Structures are given as structure tokens and as C-alpha cells.
Length: 160
Image (tube, rainbow, N blue to C red; front, side):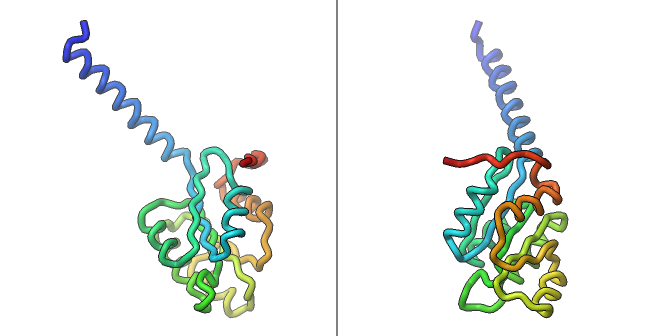
């Protein structure tokens, strides 16, 4: 008993099971990117949108958001249009990159500077929703539910 052959079989079964678990987690897990230069807003949205089987990443810069989009798959991207306060609309680049990388994803654009020209450009780049700040986490959650990111009527998990 305990021969090398049995150890390989057990090891092979364990590896196979782990691969299945990893596949299943990826299939079920939804991932959201929130990109905003306001740290308190990022932390609040991350806390209030938290739920099992939903991974939330945050970015406070265009560079960080680009890196995340280039290395991970997202079901939804929430982006501030003026992600970098020194530039006018650099969130547009994030919208375009996200939509190109994930054509079926939900893109929610937040801004405190809304007008019809900006709104049209945002939708032209591929945004799903365009919201004027302030935006409640509850409203974001409802939009994400309607997009299939969250289960309908699932209560949010409170992080203590």
C-alpha cells in the first residue's frame, strides 16, 4: 500500500478536482472594476456592492484601470468620466478599451459634468449607462442586477 502508483493516482485526482473547482469559480464568479480618483467613493462602492461570487477591483488612475482591463476579465466596469482630474475626459479611453476587450460587459459611466455632447460621446464609445453624480450604491446595484451581474433580490452582504 502507498506505492508510488497509488500516490500518482491520488495526486492526479486531486489536481483534476482542483482544476474543476478553479474552472467552476471562474464560470460562476463575476468581476467588477470600479475606476474613480476619489478613494472614499471607491471604498464605499466596493463595500456596498460586495457579494459572494462577485470580485470587485478598484483603480484610482487611468494607468491602473488599463492594467487591470488588460489582465483580467470584467462583467462590468464602472468608470468616472474624469478619472484623472487634470484631464477632461480620459475615462473615454477606459470605456473604449473595456468595450473592445469585453463586448458583452456592462459599462457604467459616472460624471459630475454632464451635458448632451458628453453624453452622446460616452454612448458612442460603448457605455451602457451614463449617470450624473452623486450616484447611490443602491442605484448601481439595481443596474448591475438588471445586467445579470447580481442575482435579483439577493441582499447585499455587509462587510464589517
